[in-house]
Image 1 (cartoon, rainbow, N blue to C red):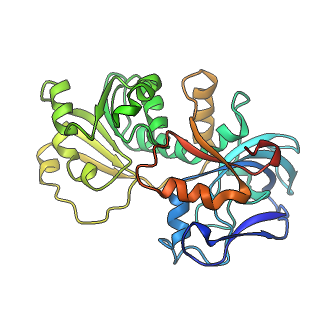
Image 2: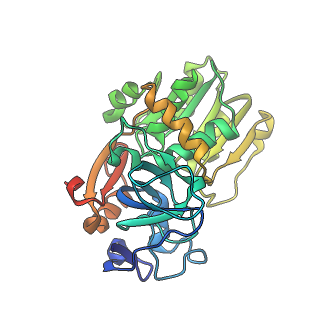
Length: 324
């Protein structure tokens, strides 16, 4: 099979399209013909060597899969050849999704929503699972609460807006002015142009000085450091970004705030919850660009470029018929 192999850490051109052995499913495993995957910040962080101690080279990386079951190993009962499936690969365990075939444990695989294309499904597994774990598993966002989602036009942010709205929250988000209508179309109630207005001032103005109940940080840096200033009493902050420097939490202490940090875990349960939202018409990923597996270096370069103007996700067509 063909796969993009990372033979040394480096820039977007570090990948090499290679012919490698097709995996064989063992007991409890499923072999999937990969139709599509997608690019996440985690993918370029792995590629450039941010997790060098966890990724032995050479490596097949990538974390999203949408495809069709090719074969099953002994003991598998949930799937049969021909089933359309989606899942996130086990992070830092075994090969990833930048290949024509992938083998995974039955326990982390879900049935793909029929209403999503493979490109759409592959754009939702990792980010969707991250959002579900953050908003439901960690901060328990509830009906009628308010939430500020930093980076609402991004891969994680645009999914978070939809999930928060489905829960019944009042949704604030920060985007560029060019993405106002996009964010509103996803369900955002209050849209803040972070380039023109201080988000803390905007939140306090819109909440009569009370702040929001929950803040979801997808950006890091200043957005995490200043979040307590926009938080209500007993508020919660959840972040998916590595902490690059020590945080001053004096303001958070004064708010009786709680902090949560998410590095998502893989399981079928989250996929089934996301599938239910998709089937009810409350969730759909937005694809900002599509590349072929052979062109994955350019996909990485685009996502890694600051202020790239992307909305949503960068999808990768592994099945040639889906390529642009």
